[in-house]
Length: 151
Image 1 (cartoon, rainbow, N blue to C red):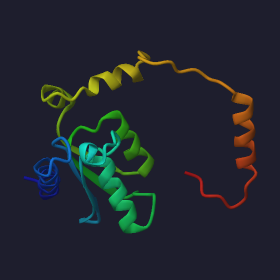
Image 2 (tube, rainbow, N blue to C red):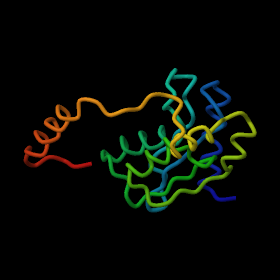
Image 3 (cartoon, rainbow, N blue to C red):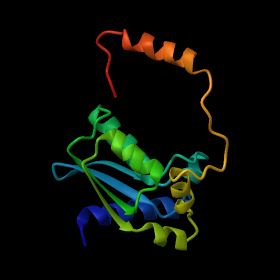
C-alpha cells in the first residue's frame, strides 16, 4: 500500500473515531514530505465546507506560509467532490490520488452526483445575474491597484 494513502486513511479514521464527520482523510505531499493533513470535520465544525481535502489544503498552506501548493500531490480516501476539486485547482496542486470513487461514496450515502447535475445546468435554486454595473466598477477599481497579488 502507498504510504501516503495509508496516512490519508489514518486521518480518516481519526476523524470518524472522534465523530468529526465521514470517512474522508487527505494528506498533501511535497518533495516526499507530508506538509498538510486533514480529515472531514463537517460535523465537528458545523460547516459543510470542512471536507478532508479542504482541511488538508488549509493545513498545508498554513504550514508553508503560502496559498500556492504548486509542486504538491494530494492523497485522499475518496475522489474529490466538485468543491474539493475546485479547492485543489485554486491551490495549484499538481496531482490527485484517490482511493474510493464517486459511486463508492454514493454507496455509503454521500450524494456527489447531485453536484455534478448542477455543473451540467440542473440547478435546484435560483441563480441569476444582478447589479452587474456596480460590480464591474468594483472590478475596475481593483484592476487599478498596483502591486496586488493575483490569485
